[in-house]
Image (cartoon, rainbow, N blue to C red; front, side, top):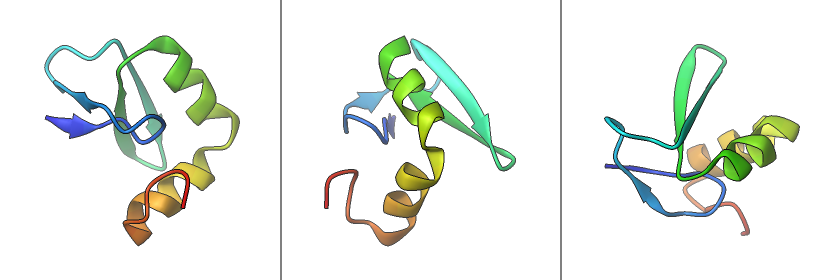
Length: 57
């Protein structure tokens, strides 16, 4: 299981609702809407992943 960076839900990486590649890494999403949100400002979510603070901190 991996975390959807947009909403925080746990996603089964074997059966995600959506995926997106950014800077050579694949991200997994619970729904196409989360993927669309991520793609608008991916650096916001990738930055929060690296800091460990989550999307809304």
